[in-house]
Amino acid sequence: MDAKLNEDAISCIKNDLHSYELLHDKFLSYIKRDPELKKLVHSYKTRCKDLEHLKNKIERKNAEDLLLPLDERKGPITCDNIKQRITDICGIRILHLYIGQFEEIHKALMKYVDSGELHSMKRPRLIHGTLNIRNYLKVLE
Image (cartoon, rainbow, N blue to C red; front, side, top):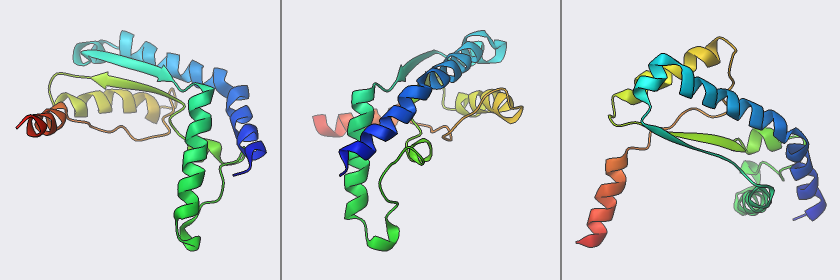
């Protein structure tokens, strides 16, 4: 894959990294200060992808793309499409104690997204902890 193309794409994110970090911090501020969210959120983990991991992800996604049939390929990741193709530059993982809290947390955050105060590139995903425990217990059997 063209290393220059990859470096150009990384530069686009690097030049705009402060915007990702500001949005990340804004989301975190709502999680910490919104009274409804404070009641629902047990804990959270945050991260912004470092540029070396971003480079690896671009290379991996470009290599995977080449393995697809021609009519399904999206083409290489470039400066023009990186923000649509890689949407996890920064992320926040919210942990809650009860599965029913997911919908309440989602609604509380989406009211800020819907009002335009926040922006989310990806839909929230529910990863249920007991699914991981079940898989772990199967390995132990």
